[in-house]
Length: 267
Image (cartoon, rainbow, N blue to C red; front, side, top):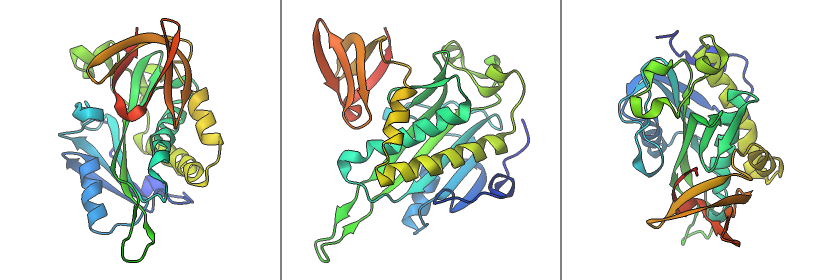
């Protein structure tokens, strides 16, 4: 185990726009997303952030397990209350994916929709959960939604720390850089990047969708997509953070929306 996470060390000198408004470091929790959601119900403000040394029930998209050995990676969840319409909520995942890739360095890319990879090996994953904005029937005003943005990042894992079935497809900052990393510094960098990218999501700054596409690991490559129980194989011809991924299938172009894709892999 490397040095423990320390909220004071992470936040010292930070001047965030929104993230983190407060940072809590737990020894252990079933899921940082669940812990953050519970705090959201208690009225915590936007930007409230939870991290933990160990997760016993971490998860990714569609309930898939997230492997997170104690003291070696990062599991962090951030409470967001964005005033965004439902059709623009995919910007939250984009902001987190770009922030994760930027934290992992110049060789990191985004594997649509929610993974950061280095040399096609997964180094980080993002999961956004919550409820969208609603319009109050009584006042007619829009009430911001409450979302929890979770990120798992492999920091100081060695090849033997990954399960057999994940080892060939996974990597970490230690593996890529050759030396152990300061997890407090890595978390600080992620929060700085996320704070900036979330601000772009809220303001409609085109820098976010542009960065998300520029960091793509998929444009021009053949992939297999699972949607509605069916598999499709084709070449990725375009990616749009709001509209989805477009594949060339036997000469025709078909677009797949993020919320409908169950699995994506290189073909």
